[in-house]
Structures are given as C-alpha cells and as structure tokens.
Length: 149
Length: 147
Image 1 (cartoon, one colour):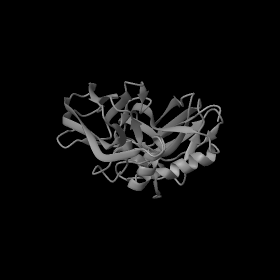
Image 2: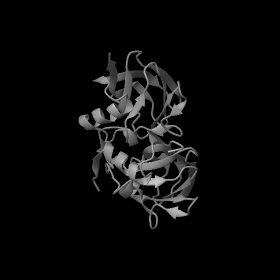
Image 3: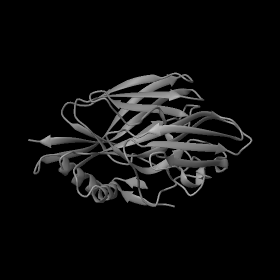
Image 4: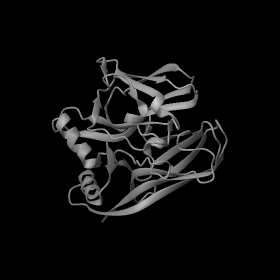
C-alpha cells in the first residue's frame, strides 16, 4: 500500500493529538544530516537535536547519494529517539524500503507519520555494506508543529 | 498491483481490527538480513515481533539489484503456522525492488505481537548475492489497557 499524506488528513491527525481547540501552526520542515565520507563496513553516527519550541512529525527520509558509489540497496541505516529509546527498525535496514526515487522506480515514504516531541534527540547511523559513501547526506523531511498561545 | 491510500486508511483498518480501542501507532521496519547468499542455495532468517505490540505490514522490499525474479520467497508465522503465500513466490512480484518498482499489497496484514516470522529465500540463479536483505515496512500498534 503506497502511503500518501494529504495535508488535510495531517491537520486532522495533528488536531487529535493536541488538546481540543488548540491553535496549531504547521510548517513544512526538514532536518539535514550530513555524514560526509563513510568507508565500506564502517558505521557513522550523527545526532539530530529537535527544536525546543516545536514538535516535529517525520514523513520521509530523503538520502542524497549523488557522489557515492553506495546505493539505497546496500546502504543501511538506523534511527533511534535517544530520549525515549524507541527505534524505527529492529536492526540496520536498507534505505530502499522507505525512499522516494529517482533510484529505479521505487517510490516510498514512511507508512505512517512519526511524531517527535520538541527537544527530542535523534541518533542516526549509516553503514555502507558494499560500496563507500562520498559526501553522503540526507534530510529528515516532515513538518513542525507550534502551539499558538 | 498499485494501491495508493492516505495514511488515514491505515487508521480506519486499525479501528476496525481493534474495535475502537485506543491505540498508539508508530512506523516500524522489520529487516531480515541474509548477508551473502550463494548461488543455488537457500537461506532462512527469523525475526520476532515485539511482545508489547502488534505489527501491521504495509509493504515489503528486497534490496537485490538484479535477477530478483529468480529469488523465491516464503514467510511463515511460526506462531500460527500460517504462510504469507500459497507457496514460494518470485520475490520481485511481491516486494519493492529497484528494477521493478513498487509492489503494493491489496490490504494490510496484521501479525500478532510476540510472533516469530521465518523468511526463507531460495536463490535459483547461478549468481551469488553479496548482501541481501528483506524488509517488512509497517507500523507497531500498541493497545492501551483498560479500554
């Protein structure tokens, strides 16, 4: 099932999370994560600090492989909310299942939006299995939520 | 099959399955890492569903970049002995794969918490795979007690 995130559905979903009647400002947002060069078999970890004045909803993970020999098929990642200890996957997982092209014709995002509280700290690791990564980066794409007083 | 739906369809499905109980839903990936798979050989990997949540599968992906049509796949829920398919199927017909693109499911698939899934791959090609992974993409459903 290919999942899409219509804005009106996201607004309704968010309004159910917060107190009824809350005035919410949703803004498209992304957290870039720069890994640089990563050797074959090496694991590189980066920290992502959420903003204090907004919660964040993750909808997709968009990697940039432009200069790398590594591909979404054989580059593995994990994402952990270090604040709560919750993981996005049971182990290192290829990027292929959750990315949007142009690699081949696979076109995916996350199956469901993932809400993170403000001030959360995320830990993201990548590990190329077969081919090295060069100037590798990705963006955690979604939107931030600010509650208006 | 192409099947495109809003994430709210998944909420509707969960509301029906759990009869309106309050649930927390969080995206989750279950990966089966086979590593190197030799030519004309079979490999089986097991993964356990977390004990405090059910898993709703939305799609599957396999990271083979060539000749996936020669990979036969069968997944068995060892808790119930139910299989995902009537018999082993070509992986590229049921999994996202780089050369063939998206392979959507007709509907979602629920796997009860604490189940153990056994995923068997049979490589029928004369070529070895250096790094093979099967990934189930879906959500974990936590049902609040006392509801």
